[in-house]
Image (cartoon, rainbow, N blue to C red; front, side, top):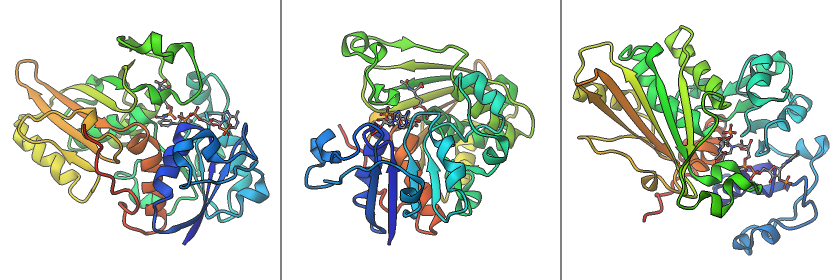
Length: 345
Ligand SMILES: NC(=O)C1=CN([C@@H]2O[C@H](COP(=O)(O)OP(=O)(O)OC[C@H]3O[C@@H](n4cnc5c(N)ncnc54)[C@H](OP(=O)(O)O)[C@@H]3O)[C@@H](O)[C@H]2O)C=CC1
Ligand SMILES: CC(=O)N[C@@H](CCC(=O)OP(=O)(O)O)C(=O)O
């Protein structure tokens, strides 16, 4: 049995971690750290957790942090990099849901995040937590950089086609669509009900911070520098991400052959489901679960392979994948504590 700490206690990522970890069979104690509400119970902020997690939140300190076996940072970018170097080597496994450790180059980070992260020596110690792809490295990691929500869906959709040399890596255009909880719980005019309802917004065209993260890991598997066009959109729904990737096919494979290749690529991965016979995934079909559903379509007319991937941004896009990584680190079955059937309708 292990002891868990969650930093950023009153945010959406933390609450989703709690939803999972309160039912995880190997977790017997949960500490919650809050910057704004230490001393309060988490159920004061989230009454739906009353009688499930009436845990009093604490202030984080290095001494406190070290009492945990695994510490999750569910904090905005700019927080975890101040703590993780102080905790490295103490035996606590550190899983960061923010972007602070996802890029190797701090200048690239600064140019996309408009703020600083830690030195390269620390960034190099982090393992990218795309569970299905970097499993072995994650199993030995002390610091896991949990992937961003858009990169999770985009990379799971594109990596088989890149590794199989099915598509031209220089041809990739990605359209992302997210639910509003992707913006976190903090109040902003952008996500105000009246601004969001009956609306469909595009934002950060060509400037979204997930672009260099997607490019880094596509380049890793393409063994060449990959540059993509990525455009995110926000949709009036609570949860869900859909990414649509448009790519140029380089081979004469049929749709069936590519589909079979994808299925073989993810054969032993319990959370990736490949759609068959032109069946296209919808965000509702993964809602509340850790699944990533993927479809591939060969557009004969344009010679393009169109890849659609859906996830729940708070599950496979954040807390679910973070727990999947905790399971990998501890040598447990990846699905432990994560067997949520999607909530439908
Ligand atoms: N929402 C999503 O779908 C996804 C989120 N992520 C990432 O996960 C992280 C958490 O996101 P999410 O939970 O949605 O965000 P929220 O804004 O909902 O929560 C973040 C929490 O962090 C704490 N916090 C805020 N500012 C500071 C600070 N300066 N220092 C320390 N703690 C602070 C606050 O909790 P308290 O005051 O209680 O400490 C806050 O509630 C972010 O980095 C986000 O980018 C990644 C993938 C998807
Ligand atoms: C709607 C909305 O604002 N979504 C967020 C999602 C990114 C996020 O949550 O950040 P990480 O995944 O990098 O940690 C955004 O586009 O910035």
